[in-house]
Length: 433
Image (tube, rainbow, N blue to C red):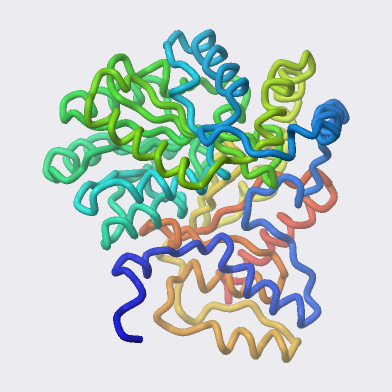
């Protein structure tokens, strides 16, 4: 080509969660059935949408208005509903103008980092959710900036390291939290949130909270949304319906802007995000129109409680299967529906393997496996190829830790038990090979 087509940051756009699907498809072609543990899609894991939600959507489908454009910022009635709901539950004051809809939260994340100056950095947790870390790294033409979550302390953030990185890197303009966290299943305790807000106050930083899983927490686990913690500090909360309802195919997420009137720079940044959405005409109409009806339905809260109970029950079942496996660390999930399982690094090497008598599978392994690859990625490829279980290595989440992420979504208990019993046997075989 006459000139370069790719920006310097394009090679930072990595998303192993879906990239591994290409390998899984090749495994399936060799006759190995795939169990999908790589992505948080409840529908794929046999979730059934309640009839009352289907009735709401069916009624809206029959309304011609659901097929048209909506306001570029999102359906006004829905934004008004969400603003009133947020003000009532969290004690803050935002209006419909402080809410901006996107075509899924992935779209929102991309836009967020796209309109920051390349020299302005947002520091986020590690293990990092790939959509955030890749987008932040790509915008900056650099590696993602992260603060560690500590597996020796229930995955809580290392606040001392966060503080020092913020203090000695003046390019950091914002702190990201993902609460509850993906991929670890940790929730940020209130006292940790208070300290993060103090860091943001001291260095005059923007706070960003991805709260897509905020409604999915285990019983007796207590955290708070960003809106309750901010005070006068500028902040952005990122929300959606893809996990909570669950309706991932809706591609319907939104941002809530807090304290725009307290900082001119922040207000201008929010306006740039609004202008970017204006160029796209509108966001998804049908699911937006469903939100007020679903969230205000008398069965909604009961549904959330029951669904969380089911996830918690699966959490306990998986714990019972994996808790005695030597060579791994399993920290029970507190929120969301993921778990990060860690290996003892000292037990991993470049010769370990899982065997197969399928020549097609062996050919794939010969193509994929090489001595210098991350040890956890090596395990996930062997697991996928020989057992058909598709998980994601933790090294692909901007982490020096070695392990893999699984979901707590499978609603068919027989499949769930079989999957994690097979996983247990595979770990033992691999570590002893």
